[in-house]
Amino acid sequence: MKKKWIIGLVAAALVLATIFAGASALAQTGSGPANPSSGVYLDSPLLVRLATALDLTPAELSAELGTGKTLASIALERNVPAEALVNAIIAPHAEQLALQVKYGYLTAEQSQALLETARERASLLWFTCQSFPFSRAVIRR
Image 1 (cartoon, rainbow, N blue to C red):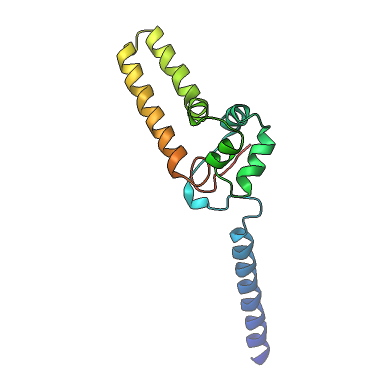
Image 2 (cartoon, helix red, strand yellow; image 1 turned 45 degrees about the horizontal axis):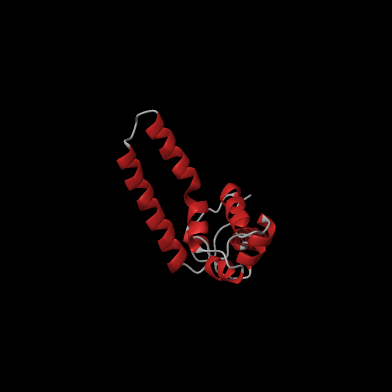
């Protein structure tokens, strides 16, 4: 009877150790986002457009943002106007709107209004966030 208790306790200890080891392994982020709750996805095309506007390589921009610098501070250091980065952010949206106007899905006025809204949102990100686009951006390749 005593043997069964010992075997049961050892089995329970192994199960608990496995659970805790798995939980701690899943909790480690490694090179993942510093702030995963930000919900930001900075994809490669956007990273390339921003790096080009800043006259950096994507790897250099990623490294700069990874040190905690803001997009605004990087742009100021490199004398790049905010408008250049806003244009880089909204470029695909602007292209899509131009196509929708071309094929008659939107009027030029509707397109301009949507583009202006996109510019305002991109500008807010520029002026209010720690790094691009939100605090400690998640950079995916």
